[in-house]
Structure formats: structure tokens, C-alpha cells
Amino acid sequence: MKKIFLIYGHYNDKSFNAAIRETFINTAEEKGHSVDAVDLYKEKFDPVFAGEEPDEIVLNHRKRIENSDAIVLIAPIWNFRMPAIVEGWIDKVLAPPWAFRFKRLFGNYGYPIGNLKGKKAVVFCTYGSPQFAVRTFFLNMPTKRLRRGVFNICGITDVVYRRYFAVPFVSEEKRKQFLDDVKKTAFNV
Image 1 (cartoon, rainbow, N blue to C red):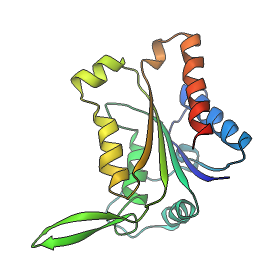
Image 2: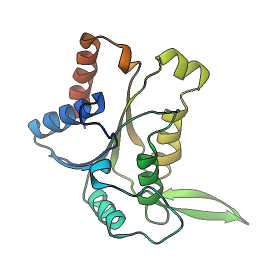
Image 3: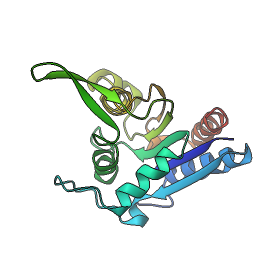
Image 4: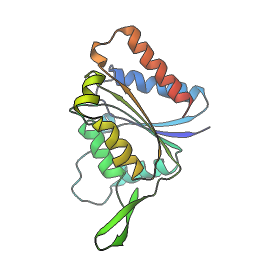
């Protein structure tokens, strides 16, 4: 049994992202995992970071991550990034020196040392764009940034990234295929 900390970042409970969340939670719990879910919009998480010390909410989320085996993010990709509320969560919660620190090599140069080693990350993202556009024109920026620029720096190297393209335009059959993929991913957390 694994402990999963799930961050959900969509404002609409009737969205396809909500279907992903429900499918993942139901499947993971069916397998015997425990899922600790946070809905950033319902929690009214403040994404603005202005250099302040972590507040009680940030400290609470960090403690929940410490007690988990895996972190799951579910959010759409808007303008080739996650919604501001999720990006702000990343900036505030997965911040140094808690999530990673820099080891100085010489002068002002160094490299990050992740403090979250041994954890797994699973990211589910929906896109309005077709896969061709994201891969060709935007070089998979959201994938690379989250995998390398967020999780790897935090020490999380086991990252599963599931993407569902052109969601507003696909058939119900295709959406069912997407949700079957969510189930398979939940079974393998």
C-alpha cells in the first residue's frame, strides 16, 4: 500500500481534469493505496510568492509530502504551462531549502541536491492543442520543465508524465481511452 499526495488544479468540477482525478483516486484506492487529495481552487490556495516564510498551509503540504510515497499533479496546460495556482504551489511548496539545496562547487557555481529522493511523481496534463503542435512548435516544454526543472532538481527521478491532447475536440470513445490510461497509471503507482 502506498501513500499518495494528490494536487488538483482545475476550477471546474465538470471538467475532464475532474474525471481524471476521480478515476485516479477510485482506482488507486481500489488497489489499496491511500490518497490524500488537495483541490487548490477549493482550498483557495494563494499562489503569490513574494519571498515570505512558508505559511501554515505550505508547511502542512510539505508534511503531507514527507509522509507520502508519491506526488500526483492533475492540471490542464494553458499557454504551455500549468494554471497559475499550480505554478504558485510549485514555487511555494517545492522550494529550497526544503525540497532542494545547492552544493557549491567553486565561486558562485554549484548544483542542486534534491531532498525528496525515493519519491515518485505522476503528472496528468490535458491540452487543447493537438500533440503535433506541442511536440513540433513548442518542443515539449511543459514536460521537460516539470520533469527536469522541478522534480529532478527535488531529487525525484521516477517521474511518469501522462498527456492527453486536443481534449475539447476528441470523441467520447477517445476520452474513455484516456481514462483507461489513467486507471493503468494508477495501478502502477
